[in-house]
Length: 126
Image 1 (tube, rainbow, N blue to C red):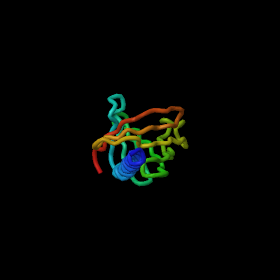
Image 2: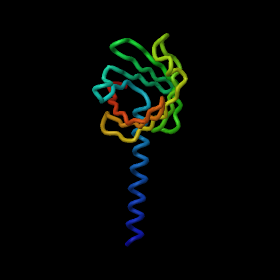
Image 3: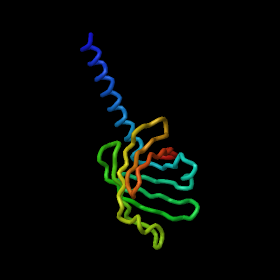
Image 4: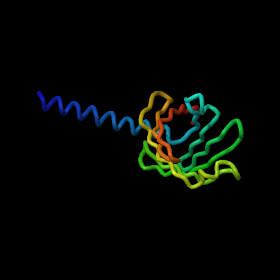
């Protein structure tokens, strides 16, 4: 009985893990907004290898190169920033991991630029 219970647990765990990876693929590209009202002014457009972040109030656009480590994890390196705006970000890296998915909302864990934080994003367009 105990072996059956362990086998059932392992099967359920691997099934959930694989389905998470498959869902992550749906969030590798598209247009996103931040769920947190403090960041609502920023829009993200992610393509397979490039991400742009636009401040809809000031018009400042940051661009970064994406290196996918897995379907749910990538490293973002900021490659283009406007003159005199956020220059300290240029060349900086952020490691991002998609940790959960609920409908069109994802929870990402980001580490970089001297910060560790959880970020919720909503996919608004493919």
